[in-house]
Image (tube, rainbow, N blue to C red; front, top):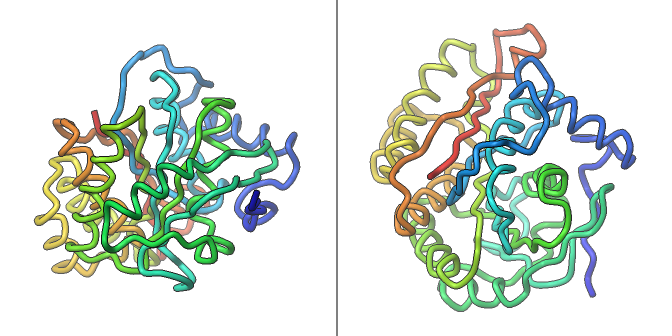
Length: 279
């Protein structure tokens, strides 16, 4: 069995099990977080979510809003996590094929049958483990998932070099087909505007978020391009939007928006973060 070792532990989140558990609880209890520990008492089911992927110090409390909401639903059998390929290594759309991923909280198994199905259903996706070895965007989501669901779920990591409309909508259709076969949660891992003044980031991100909440993928791309928004995982977001709309989601709900400046106090150059759920 191929085991993917942590690449971001000790950088984006703590390396030890105890410190990581404490950091996760700190994200939920933070003044920018939901303010309470899981599980949520709102027993709602969700098709998917958009969650940030910066270091826990910066985006962890914002991410905790999504995971608090997801903690109230029945644990899915499969969690598909999509994000941008920050390193540009490997295939245009890389699906992790088999084995497991380790975190300081333990091991999470890959759903190899789902990986094969997604690669066969989409002409764009390839089975490719090499693209995932250094990237953090999926890895940082795993401890949150382990915290709220414990064991008993499998994952399917997907990272994208190509994030254009055609790629995203094709992957979205394949994801919807996969999700109709088994209990599945779809997570788009993405930060929003990068390194612009807070008010500019807020203006741009709020317009893009409006398109996400309405599940309007064409308008999402038009806003993205017209305003030159530097959301890193826009293709992952669009793919999840397309998939959940096909699965029957009515809209999205913004749980929390924040920026790195809310943590550092420096609003001159921030990164935007959002937690959004689809129901």
